[in-house]
Length: 324
Image (tube, rainbow, N blue to C red; front, side):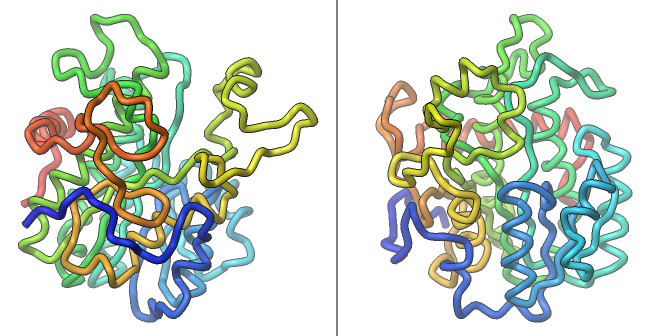
C-alpha cells in the first residue's frame, strides 16, 4: 500500500540534528551500511548510528581517507568499493553478505555534484552512474540480507536539486544531447527519489521499506566542482567566508543535514510506511507541478510511479542487476 506524500507531524523540524532524532532509539544488534560514510553528513550518520548500538559498514573509494576519518570509531568496518566500478560493488556486497545474516539499514548517501563530463568504464555518465546506478546495483546485491532483517529500511539521498531535471529515458547518459552538469545532477537526484518509489513497491511484501531524503543545503566536499561565482550565487557563505546557517531556508549544519536520513532509517513513526520523499525530518508535501519554484516540497517528476517503473527497468538493463 502506498503512503501519502503528506507530512505526518513528526515532532522534529529543519533545525533538528541527527542526535536529536535518534534519542531513545536502541540499535543494538542491528547492522547498517552507509555509503559515503567517511565525510560530510555520511560521517555524522555513521557516528550517531554507531553510538546507538549499530554495527556499521562503510564502503570507501579512498581507503586511507576513510580510515583517517573513522580512526576514533575502530569498530566501524571500512571496506573498498567504488560506485563507478560494478566489479568492486559486487565484491563489497559479497563481503557484507558473508559477514552478516541480516542488514537492517542501508543508507545510499554517497554522491557527486555537477562535475565536468566524465564516464565510467561502460560509458555511462558519472553522476547517473555513481549517484543512481551504483546504488541500484548495491541494493540489489544486498537484497537477501535486507529481506532477512524483517523490517529493513533503505534510504536514498535525493535533493532539492531534483527540480533541475527529470529522467531523459532516450538519452540518460548524454550521448546525443549536450552535457550540462546541473541538468545531469538533477536527473540523478530525480532518479534517487524514483528509486525509492519503485523499491518500496517491490519490497514491502518482504518487509523492506524505502525512503528518499532531501538533507538540505550543507557545505561539504560535494561543492568542490562549484565555481566561486556559483558558490556566491547560492548564498551559502557570507562576505567574510563564514557559513550561513538558516535551516528553515535550506541552509543547514552537518548534524542538521544528517537528521532526515537518520529519522527515516530509525523512527518508529514510519513503521508500515514508505515510498515517499522526506525533508526536514518529516514526509514532504507534494508540489503541484515540476515548474514550481517553491523551496520546500517534492515535484511530481520525483514521485511518479510510472516513471519509477520505467527507471527500474532501465536500471536493470544498464547494470544487469535485479532483485531475485
